[in-house]
Image (cartoon, rainbow, N blue to C red):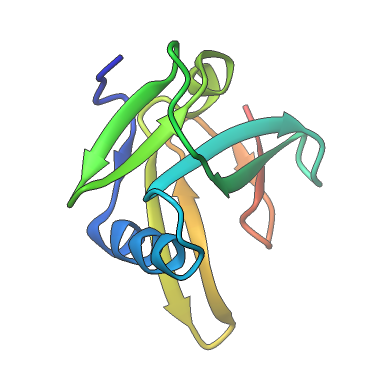
Length: 110
């Protein structure tokens, strides 16, 4: 299912491609949302072998971002970015639906 409900930034796509190549896996990043974290929901990232039939799939520079339908409801409109700073480097989700977040940037509430 092609969709533009979410966006994978070019810097995130480049990082996924590098990680996937090192691990000899396809360049497919799975974003899911789970209950927990310090704000109610937390983001979970991992490499996927293939998209599931009901996943939302977006592609940037040959790298695919896949999100399951349940998680998509919570991250619709998001941009997945890769940011390097003095505090370290990490994937970051810019979620316009999040009412509150936490200092670590990996959990949110709606």
